[in-house]
Amino acid sequence: MSKTLRLILGDQLNSNHSWFKTVDDSVTYVMMEIRSETDYAKHHIQKVVGFFSAMRSFAAELQSKNHKVIYIHLNDSNNLQSFDKNIQHLIEKENFTHFEYQLPDEYRVDETLKNFCKTLSIANSVIDSEHFF
Image (cartoon, rainbow, N blue to C red; front, side):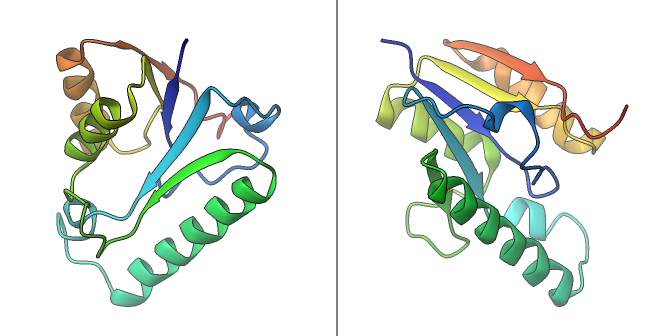
């Protein structure tokens, strides 16, 4: 059976994205609060809190619409504090057979995810964020 893990970044909270049009039990969305994103540059604490609050609300909205969501909080004991480590752990733990993510707006994150996907032994794909026409 196919199981897909889809990453949603903190600046991709678009409930109108085509991903969310149908509920599919074989698809799980993951969102994560990680130190590699809060610490790569100096951020005002209110910006970080605002992002995390929006992410938590979006995750709750998806769950209320019966989508499967894994939400990793900043201080969760199982948080490995990076996209690649958390995703790899989830793939192994939950036996996902496919990984998908939306095109990041930041070059740094795009390179991280592209390089990570080269190391994966499962199918992976990238989809448009549908932010721009």
